[in-house]
Length: 431
Image (tube, rainbow, N blue to C red):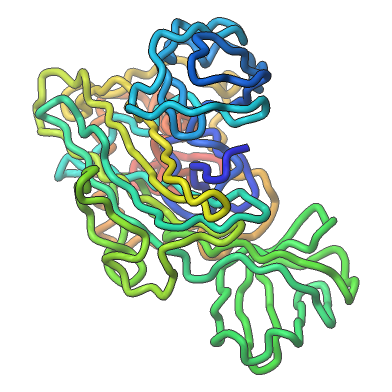
């Protein structure tokens, strides 16, 4: 696996993110932003072919991939149908390296991160996590920039950085109940509630918990949920705190403090990790530490065509073990756009069984109080309803229910938003 990797974000920790449109902050998910596999043979400086391992899910999703990233080298390749790769151009980014069997191979074209739902300012937002997955190496000099902004003059991209409230920690408990854990070695080492909302997982146990509070004077953690075990002396891990979680991709994240403003950094003006925030996090990532990148996408209202609106995001860094500059380049392509002001979603077939009106919810069974449901103000509720109500005009109640269900399945809206709209539309939706 690469030292530095990019992931989608999710409502809950330690889960896969199947809906890219719901990558709107919260916890780092288990899902990479991009397609991912590894080399099965060494690649020299002049090699024009190599082999890669069969990825999880097979080759279908790799159709259309024309660039690969190996150790920061961008390689243009022939269409990929199996593990035998034919090279059209080495060093497309003017960097050629030797690569070893087992090295990480990333498809530069990412999953479709955006959809066609915008706010009244024609903006939408997504959040991805960047994590140091090395067990031994610190990563220094980390920065991000937009290598290529949208080639469509009616579309533009800006990015911001959010640093987590707390970082990765591995330690041992000194006492424990089903709802608390005490670590005497942490007494007066951190301020109260430094770890709030971070995910703590005992090593070797299948499930962890969200930290509700931390008392520095006693080293005591209190959790929102209860553990099935109360084994006293356990090794545990606390993973970096979540990013802010948006109610919907049409709302902007709060700027300030640990979150920089939205910028358009270039290769000549890289946005480094230690800039534009008041966080104490340095310009480096220790093992298992991370930071978040917010992406703001804007389109011009009434744009007739939305082709060529993908962009290339680059993360640059130096690995302390070799002190060699490296980079990750990801081409992010939105789904084909539909102007929802003029073309409402048709009432088609639902992915749920015929006649079902149940809106799916998270299946983890854990109570994640900070992020599970939101209390909308009257103004926010009306804004959401006004945005989506044109899709329901002229439809029967069953058709309206099918539309809301499909929007949840597609990841366009969260279940609580669908419920809110259903209530305002006076529908009887089973929860």
